[in-house]
Amino acid sequence: MSMLSVRDVSYIYQSKYQSIEAVRHVSCVFESGKLYAVTGPSGSGKSTLLSLLAGLDLPTSGEILVEGKSMASLDRDQYRREIASVVYQSFNLFPLLTALENVIYPMELLGKKKPEAVEIAMQLIGEVGLGEKTYQQFPIMMSGGEQQRVAIARALAAGGKILLADEPTGNLDSANEKNVVELLRTLAHKQGYLVIVITHNPYVAEQADAVYRMRDGELQTDGRA
Ligand code: ADP
Ligand code: ADP
Image 1: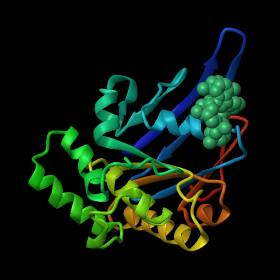
Image 2 (image 1 turned 120 degrees about the horizontal axis):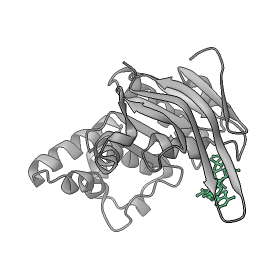
Image 3 (image 1 turned 90 degrees about the vertical axis):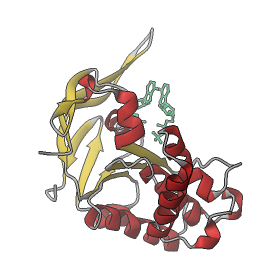
Image 4 (image 1 turned 45 degrees about the vertical axis):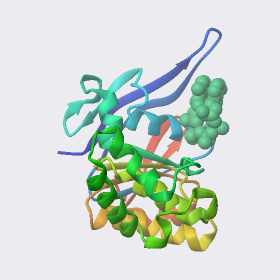
């Protein structure tokens, strides 16, 4: 069973004066253990699709299934806290918390005991390729690549199996971009996460197992899906 199945999904932004069909009759599947890229021009509906996959909005029509269960029937707060996490181009770390505290934070929200949360956070920081000296650093002291790794560690901290990333390498130089993409590949291939990345970057798309291309709200595959 697919981790996520998108079935004839459309999404319409409705305002008083106009409606914009940002996603049009999209159908596709996303499997665990794979890295997917979603590409396409600005305004083609990528971010809207990602927000539907993240459970931030429900489709106007059609449905998204999470391991066979309709997203509409799930507790979406729980889905967002415990199953699917999003990382962004601008990292969005808490500036007044250290790297370790940033990663601990989602576990505290879930009521995990502090010593256990600290242990898991240290392990995750190691898994994203950062050393012990990172623990006590504040975001402002870290490079962009390091901040994105901490953001990824924080996204994984709640124990979910879906990682969604909106232009995760958009603010990184090419060396850091390569490293972060390699990390995303490893998380998919070695640890079984479903990783979905929105990207304009041909290099990132090339590293994905499958590429979905959006155009005017519609989705096309490149044959590698
Ligand atoms: P992309 O991520 O590919 O740039 P978006 O999903 O952000 O595309 O946008 C798709 C379409 O939906 C665009 O026409 C955009 O202007 C429109 N749109 C996005 N967000 C909103 C919103 N909050 N309200 C109204 N229209 C929106
Ligand atoms: P991206 O390409 O990264 O999606 P956009 O520039 O399309 O960024 O959108 C930036 C923000 O503005 C998003 O939160 C989007 O929802 C919102 N937005 C985009 N288009 C519109 C619109 N026509 N009306 C209202 N909000 C919009």
